Length: 156
Image (cartoon, rainbow, N blue to C red; front, side, top):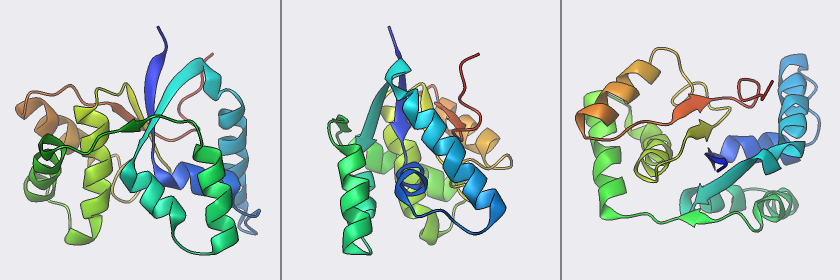
């Protein structure tokens, strides 16, 4: 059985964006492309939030993002997901700006994902926040996914 990976929007953005002139960003884009080539090792999932975010902005760029997401199953946004996200915002605490990030974490957690893959290191893949997210998850009866970047999710 394959492990389940929730693909957060930043991964698709890095995958489909024009090469960034910043060397670190460009390297992260290349890492994302390499990881994407091996994605069939995992069962991928997304949510309506990913589709909503990927559809925003430049029309041509949005088409590329949406095309990359084609065929990936969508996890339902339930009342349970919404309640969990509110608990994250309140208990960690996360700013209201990070509400959508809390929703990504909630969808992946309630959806039973093994991993939440992201390049959002401010509110999601953040070493300071991860233990807090895990504590809130377990307090509410969930096993949290491993939150990581494509660089961290390599099979050896």
